[in-house]
Image 1 (cartoon, rainbow, N blue to C red):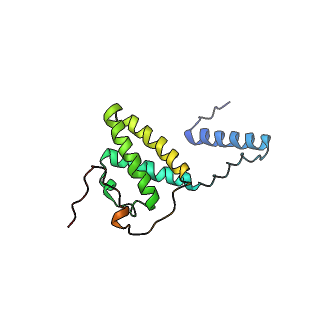
Image 2: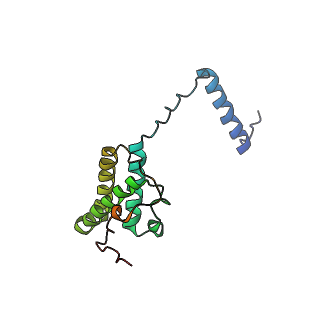
Image 3: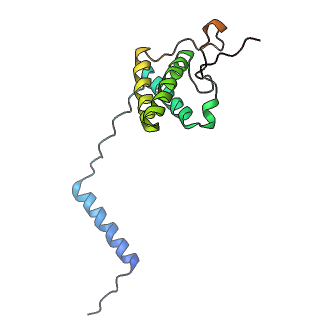
Length: 143
């Protein structure tokens, strides 16, 4: 009796046939469907945006210098950003960058939920009386 040599092609074919037999023997059951992605709430979007941009500022990212509009923030979200960034910089000096990142996530969530997403007042201009003091603590000198 002559013995056939197993070639890589024959081994692959045998494995494929075994796989087909397995599928046929178990039936054509569908894999469980993935749950539908849940819609993001305004507070979720606010938290994600604010936390992201605070962390970029802490890292000194080039993109952190964009204005609020370029970052996709409403005026209210930008105010939350400024508040969280100030607290995160203080935390970074006290306990390090990772602690500052954790604070950014926590405070962004808390303030965005409190403000129900802070989606209002996205106008392009604020009167000087409503402008916030820069985080460096220095107010620009009047011209």
